[in-house]
Length: 475
Image (tube, rainbow, N blue to C red; front, side, top):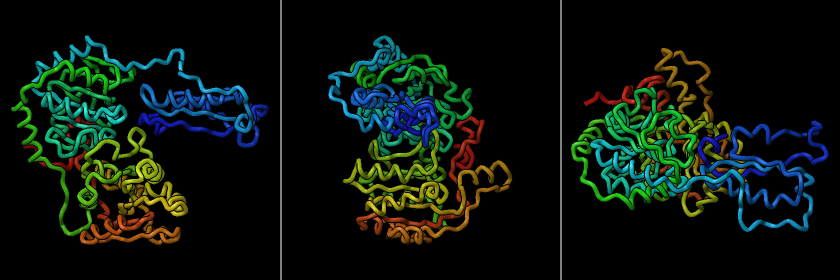
């Protein structure tokens, strides 16, 4: 389900009871194809060994083309052990009715450029589709050529370098104030590989209220689903951006608009408290300064995820891995293991909360027994922090089932044979992070942060995205 929501190409091979027992409620039989139908692009139940090679090839093709996503192949025991003398891989995968559109319609592309030529306050809203399509170079070139500021979704982080002058950071519920202000005041929004989900838009009727909207996406079902658009373009975002670049010329900078955004950036920066206590924002910024662009950062789900998205400086795409659409607690540690095998050349950090890490803490055994050098940074406040924050702000501090018992994560790590360290003050942060990098195996850091630290700014449920709390007074 997480892969489906976040458009991650995965092929899952699952085991099934022998074909002669299907439908008999045999031991461990489960209708996995029926169960997963709503959360996969496609699934198969293979009943003949001769079909297996073709089906697996099709599964990888479907998962990696069009809007990417998971495909499941259910293999009965007798099929997995069977032999087929005539099994051959087809030279080309051809599936009736499956023909994703990659090239955008030329007339729609021309309409988009026409709208852009009249815009005074344009804004690019970039989502995870940029990452999936490997379109970051084209995005940066397009934004630079047209002098358009860029704001990203949680899943789009990294598609434009953090220090790029046109980068406004993340928008939405816990986005930067200046990104949300820009959305509210833009007169043209170019949505690229994004889906206008509720965590981005807030009250949908007030989202980009003055803007004409261009929406570029490979999935036609996403266009117009949540927000009416003026120019829809169905196609691979990289291909569409290449078409736009081929047709457009460098434009004069929108000086008044860019000056206004610069003013917002200067007067509404993200806050990093400095009062001698151990704050999570400081930990994330210290890690960012230490590893720069030489690491893969994975997060769990909760406050830890938002602090990382806000305060880590991502220079490149595919260096930030998280669960967006479903917010799957426990995601981080298994994802970090996978990230290591994909990028063994750089350190991999799992930024976790003490609640989320305990959803899959048994995987300490996996990283220990296989010496997978994942560095686990636990922001430990002894709460399910994001839920507690809502209870504080909207339920008058009536905390219910969010306080967690104190856990010594260093002792747990040591019990698995993993090195670990507890950190309780700011001056211990950098040495702990450096110790994790110096260790050639897995390493666990238990950061005892301020217990009731909140993630700000925050857009309350049902509010417009410029109605933030916990930020700066608007100047």
